[in-house]
Amino acid sequence: MLKKLIIAASLALVSQAYADITIGQSVPTTGLAAETGKAMALGASIYFNQVNGRGGVNGELINHVVRDDAGNPQTTVKNAQDFIEKENATALISFYGTDNIAALIKSKVLDTNSVPLVGVHTGADSLRNPGSPYIFHTRASYTQEIDRLVKLLNENLGVTKFGVLAQQGGFGDAGVTALKASLAKKQLKIAGEAWYDGKTGDSSKAAAELAKINPEAVILVAVTKPAATFVQEYKNHGGTSQIYALSAVQFEEVGKQIGKKTAHGLGISQVMPYPYNTRARVVQEFQDDVYAELGSGSSGKKESLAAIAKYPSYAMLEGYIAARIVVEGIKRAGKAPSRAAVYNALTTLNRFDLGGFVVDYNATKRAGSNFGELTMISPTGALTR
Image (cartoon, rainbow, N blue to C red; front, top):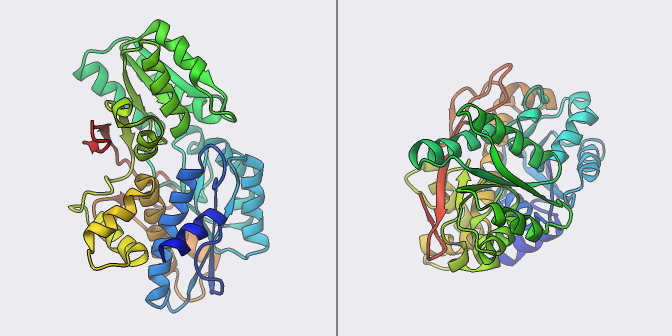
């Protein structure tokens, strides 16, 4: 089963081949953010497979179709169109990327076809206000993440000199705009900013530039690989700043890329529950479902934790949570649900508690979650919270 699911995620062909309800997902399974995209798809597929194993939703199976967009916004739009026009998708789930979602909103493909999209891996405020009424957000915004970081660093630790690394494009623009606004509330300005090419992911030059300034803290508006490269190169150039990343960074991949010793001390903002905190019911159920799909022995919990640790666990949980939400919408929509019925059902998820993670939608509200916490990579490569 483990080999089957890994191949499925890698080739972007996940879950049942013949089913009654099709759910489409466009993520990067190749390119700079491939590991995050694969993990998001895997998390969703694990829950859908569990649902199908219990007979489906209202007696109908779910067909989870995943396509690679390699981070290209136009490919994301084409994938969405194909899901809708060729696959007759009832809903979409867990798309990735700020520029990708911006292109999707601009295309009007969701609005024209009344297709709901549950979960997008971006927190850009520009995609929420006005955004699209058909996108149901499961993440807190970048503004919320950055406000939390600034509060910790400024109010608790006395930091006044902030630098920022940002990815060229919509993601970086959104993060830097949010940081400038957050600092302005405290009569502060960015002390130094450096940008990297979102296509190549090379942040080495940016690390050298910011190391010359060496502000008290550096905020990373970056995805995992460039963030890890920055941390390594920044330290190599003598930078001593406290470094904090937004939730786009997956801690496991940072440790694999630059080693636990170099990764130690990197702070990361999180917008999903800690994937190992079983005091949260949704996490316990996530672990149980991972074991059911990926486990093969009798060690139960130990084996499920080992399986989770092989992937970017937060991204995996994010896909899983989005799948839980879309299935609840389908349940409430009734037998043979139309797109409109699922959309309307999702708007009834008022203070819907998955067990340690709440989403709150209504007729007009689409920003479903305010969840957030700060973590830091420990000397062992694990997270402290």
